[in-house]
Length: 76
Image 1 (cartoon, rainbow, N blue to C red):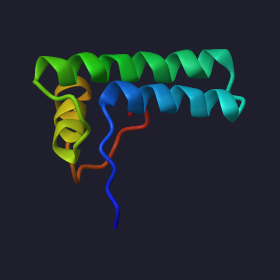
Image 2: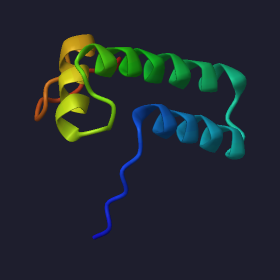
Image 3: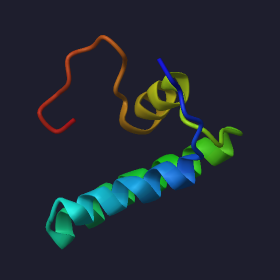
């Protein structure tokens, strides 16, 4: 499997462009952008510039109280 290294900032930018290409509503795009911006700040504060499962899991646990392997609530 080929793994490409991409910065979190670039990854989020590509995600935002994909939402545009798929025709998502402005409100939905703003919702995703806000969550991704929170993640970028969290990752930067923890010294991460690239995505990993570990930083993703840590963000979900610390920011939203979502723990790996636990059933999500309706709001999560």
